[in-house]
Length: 340
Image (cartoon, rainbow, N blue to C red; front, top):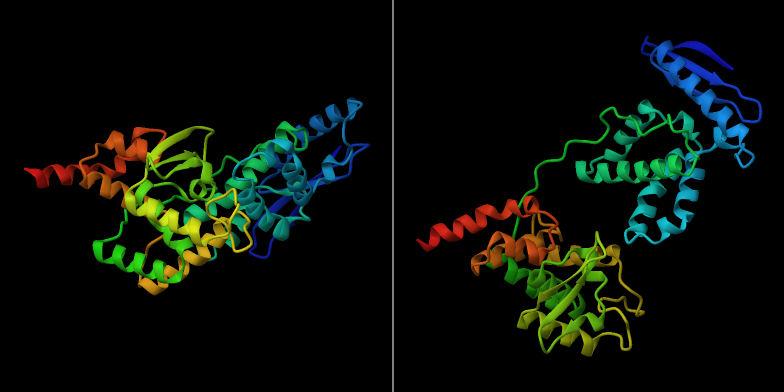
């Protein structure tokens, strides 16, 4: 059965708390702006819990399931553990577990999610905030499919994700590139090779860190790239400076390693290790408003200068659709104009 309680907030507005009690399950409650909203939720939840109760294998703790519990089960799922971006997912969900871990899943409505969004923001870019929300949404949808979240508790349709600014195209000038490479070369062969290969091939950070020595043919100047977002592979060309930087890295780095970019102990480097070294190079080179991902824009710019078409640029960068490559149309158009 369901009961309702009207409460007055500090700002003078009111809310309605719906309490659902079904024998065999713990009590569930949730706040709503009006009683009709509360009543619809309560009736749907009652029906779902009764259906769960009628199945012999139904779990009796669904009404008491916490956000931390849902996250732990999601991350322990074999399919989740096989995801290529599972480390990033674990890091993003750790924030939710720390902040809202004790919150019941059934109580995590739009007001709580909006509150969490503002806490996440805290100076972060819109795209970063949206990644935190998307991580929880993935966990939430998995919970619905696994029967841990009632089906009527779908991810809120009300606008939660922030509007992201249109993609920018920032690349290094000749002077900035020279300063960056000089700073990297002074620091270590490791970061120098990482930057040179990224500029030469346009690989994403995740793709770069997954490169193995067997993926390289330094005589034929080719690199087999394992895509970040799909299981597809693509073959990209290495220029002479990139090949030379990789040969130097092999001579000076740890021996008998599977991965090209490793830490001092020989373990595969992760994005945090790379970001730390990249930050040092940026500061030494005096770069402003330049991210690691912008190195891909450098690749597109240099390809356009060498006469590549949009389709060829998209193929090198591993774009899934032409619309993504269209951001570089002005580079190709500018090249054409200059050639007249």
